[in-house]
Length: 156
Image (cartoon, rainbow, N blue to C red; front, side, top):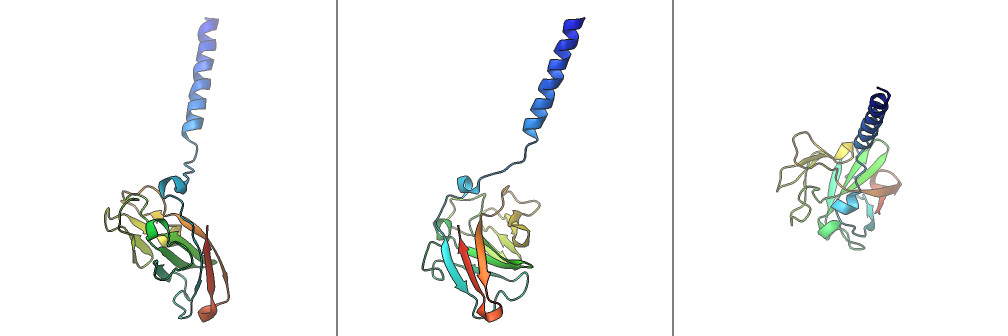
């Protein structure tokens, strides 16, 4: 009877260990999904396009001459948040090798290939019903100035 109880203890220990490993967060390295591309540029918001929270712009290789415009030159999306700015690669995390880039639709970015929709105000996370499972790749930002004198630095 004693060996049966000890085996039961091992079973529960194994079960708890298995649950512990399977419930760990998915800390996905987006460089494995959207390959690394050197991004380092400054955007001067002369026309105050990013003056209000939720305003977004799309920049492509014609707008960014000092570095790549993200993976496969798909472009960079910049959005004004309450506490500054955020910048995202315009590569869909589901159709990474597509020649197409996500397109802005208000505060959403939509993939023309798989119809995945990403919420730019929520860290580029996929919207419910999207086939994409991972957020858009986000770049670091810093800014100086305000209004038409705002300078946003985007880098990785």
